[in-house]
Amino acid sequence: MPKQVDHEGRRRRIAEAVCLLVDEHGLEGVTLRDVATRAEVSMGAVQRCFRTKEEMLLAALAYVGERVTARVRNRLTAGPAQSAATELGLVAGEVALLREEHRAEARIWLAFVAGAAVNPALAATLRSSYAALEGLVVRLVAEAAGGGSALGGATGG
Image 1: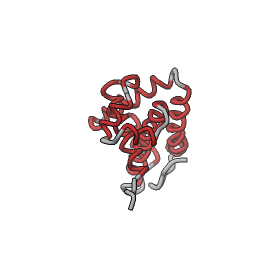
Image 2 (image 1 turned 120 degrees about the vertical axis):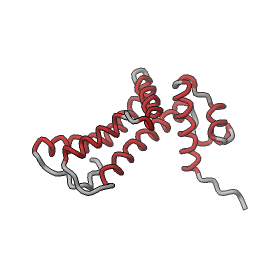
Image 3 (image 1 turned 45 degrees about the vertical axis):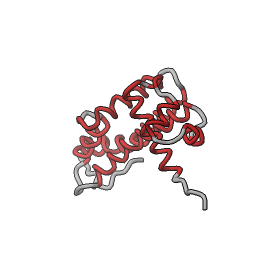
């Protein structure tokens, strides 16, 4: 019986490896060989998941955006309902990536932002990542300005 491969798990592991390498060497320092080594998969496995280096970088950027968005959603739904202003503060705190445990993620995100200045595909993925949070932030700002309550279950637009 052939071995069952968790393709999504493999893609996630490769994206994590790309992120670690971006943190260490920048976008230009990421190589297929290093990604395969860091992800503990063969170079062929990386190539089966991603046809090009750019595809691999785009997946890693999307992965970082998804992690930040998931943390924001978890933070907003973890406790009791709070005011929109309080929730806006929680969102800003998560998106700012200022806590010590998020420093590497901040460096990775900034490397992608810098790359997006000259790479339209990275810029489009970056805009998509921001769009996932934009509706939530706009709503929270409007509610905070009006003195309303977000009532906990805010998950974005």
